[in-house]
Amino acid sequence: MRSNYLFTSESVSEGHPDKVSDQISDAIVDLFLSKDSEARVACETLTTTQRVVLAGEIRGNGIMDKDGEWAPGIEQEIEDTVRGIVREIGYEQDGFHWKTLTFENHLHGQSAHIAQGVDASGNKDEGAGDQGIMFGYACDETPDLMPAPIDYSHKILAQLATDRKNGTAPFLEPDSKSQVTLRYDNGKPVACTAVVVSTQHAPGYDTGDKEAELHAYVKGVVNAILPAGFVSDETEWHINPTGTFEIGGPDGDAGLTGRKIIVDTYGGAAPHGGGAFSGKDPTKVDRSAAYITRYLAKNIVAAGLATRCTIQLSYAIGVSKPLSLYVDTHGTGTVDDAKLEDAIRSIDKLGGLTPRAIRTHLGLNKPIYRQSASYGHFGRTPEGDAFPWERTDLVEELKAALN
Image (cartoon, rainbow, N blue to C red):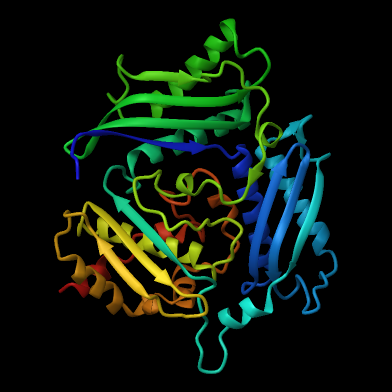
């Protein structure tokens, strides 16, 4: 592993067309889980100019009956949820307006062949909702135990959204992107060499004094978020480098659920199994196993057992037991990686990392997903039922399992 290098990660805001789609899909997951905690949901969203389209498979009591008929009133709740998300994000533009956009719902019942593989029956435990590989990661670069470039990229855009909504920066519109390049010395981030922020803006903020106001505002946000001394005279700035960014969101580019999987995870600093999270209920191991691997990696780092940790799990559709568990502390571990694998397997409350055990331990059968669909699924602060995979409540049990 190189110790001196530059590394870059990007983020996109809640108003980015793909993130609009992710938030709608997860809001539908939350709606259905609020009616049936065992609901099965695979909801994909397309957003484009003045249009939102839903497609996918669902199943659940109080949602759809076995013949594929919607429960009374649920179709209107779905549409109201979609329009509410668009309104909350802040889209009231001619090209994308929560009130006047065209909405299409093409969700239908779940395949019986998928259901028979996933559902528990007789002596068969509930199986994974699909095959696949999932990765979790943690490192000590930030207090959130996240890679610094993606952590700062998220926080820059989250602050822009806060300031847009509270009136501090009324010239901002919902769509924006950030990118942060950091210099690493001896494997630790020490300086910011480049920042890119492209933000949709009100008319006129691409020239003269108004442009200067927007640029000064963005630089102020970046300086407040990055550690003291990271920004210097040598930092390269690119703020709205195309010059004008008035047309944005789904009016400027189509959005689809699941297209920002690196933004959602570790900014490229860790492997990714390829599966997206948003729009999926927690029987889908693309989601739940990615959450448990982050949880385990974070607890290993929080316990002081490593400064950097990658964990992989793999599953087969319809099979409950994971096919493999892999821990890699990249030479930073205080114990052998194989011993960490054995320790994880030995902790009873983890239940062998079956899909149901993961959901039970983390409490995933709850409507907690919409808020994860922008500014990253990881590195967030657990609050109430939200972001349970960010807790560090396994530290002592991991240490005990190693003794």
